[in-house]
Length: 258
Image (tube, rainbow, N blue to C red; front, side, top):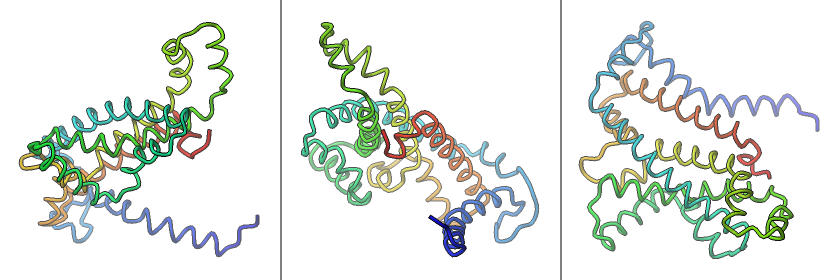
């Protein structure tokens, strides 16, 4: 198919619209001006300020702790869900696993808030945030693992059964090694989504719990300083690194191919 100049122009305009604001955030994180209204000069000062900001470092620690805990549990549960979705083809199971993925974040956040308070009588805090992040991360892991399962030759499982292998041995020696790249990719996706999440965290964090997105939101209500640009740049770098790792580990799976 021949690509005309108008198609290239439209693509260039779309990518410029998407990525130019991100480039501006990165550039202005090096701006030698507190007001950040215009470019004054290049400086690393705001990264130094960021490293001395105890509240920001505490929020970063909370984000990493929540992401590690939620992605670990979501990876384990999502792997089991992905295998079950592939083998049993149950529409109800697929619906339950995928519903949090398709549901608008604000609706999921409000639902989890009401569930934690009214049903579980749980005090909002780190535990509620971790549970909320596990809830919406499981579906993403399950999708990647199910795609990984679809690329495995079923005759391998039949051969293992014929040779007398138990279901656990078959999983440990055949299934899991083959889907391991998908499991790792799903875990990296869950970690990335947890670190970046704002809406669901906002509803389930409670008083006294601050993550990087919540901290950034509280800062930009006053003014967008270069320190905000600096932490946004670092978060962007972390997110892109995770995405690149996931795409390198399981390139076909993240494109929806077996």
